[in-house]
Image (tube, rainbow over all chains, first blue to last red; front, side):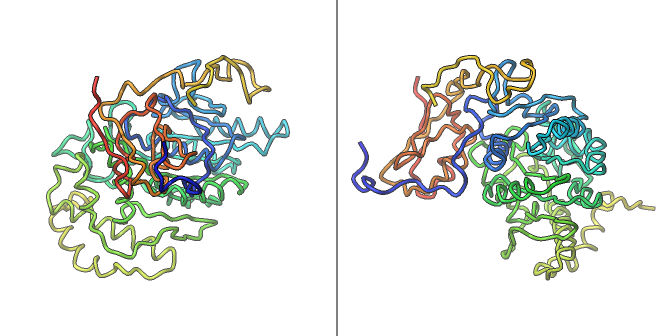
Length: 330
Length: 97
């Protein structure tokens, strides 16, 4: 029986489309962010979509043959070839007069920034009408948390155990795509589905190569409990570690502006993979965040209101950790 | 969702070779058995924001009614819904065998 104050009129409101194109019963871990990324993307793209998926978490989550958890055709391909396979699928559709079908290459961060980067670069250079989406969980989570080019500085993985944690910063894939003169590229976050759906809808309308990257939390890999899966990635954006912006024909634009200063330690302390970091090392990460933010503000042509955070930081941090900045000590 | 039949059919891919089309739904896999803790909805506290539905990684929350109804066949018990609920209308309880 419904409680009295709810009877009559009150219904649940939604801010994102209600249509579901992913079935329950998939094989993702508890609290998986990648499934949410897929769900929001398909809400925007709709049924008229074909996926090309290389070896990544989603090639497992989808289920074993002959079962699938998606209501759209999906092509499992080799690790390096998500982009080139999508190019081929698109060319095949185009020659048969079906160019209106959304062809999506859906890859994890390993299949994008390390193994698949030459196929992706080729796809963007040729100008194929493909939407490439990287769901970024910041390591090779499918095979057991090995370090990838997308792993952030300071993170524990099984191949970078402390004290030999990852010393180089995360590869800036969006900047690499901008250098290809791509028509549209953007970052996303599973904690902001409205923002993400807007970006996917925008990318869908553009003819030519598109690259989107969405941050997806991974409870077993990031070593946090499954219920804070959304909170962690929300903090990634509010601490400016993962800013939300889009680049259209070289024009940078923030889609979510941060006004309040939240130290990056708020994001780091929730996760077990950063537990070994000392305060000085967190300072280094804060500096990298400020540098990236200042760079983005300059590109977007807006005033950096956190500019004072950068002052005096650089010398202090570089003095303590020269090896993090590739400075040879004589 | 539960009442659907798991029949083998090729849909939406009529002009693709049969091997490229999928033959069944993952709905056969009842992931509810993975669960250690179970979410319980308190309808009196619910304000109808549907955040639980929006952030459910297993897509097992139905919001067609006045308050969320959880499908325990597929809920893996991750606890995201209870953590994100602004009015604490969902609580996690230990699963009893």
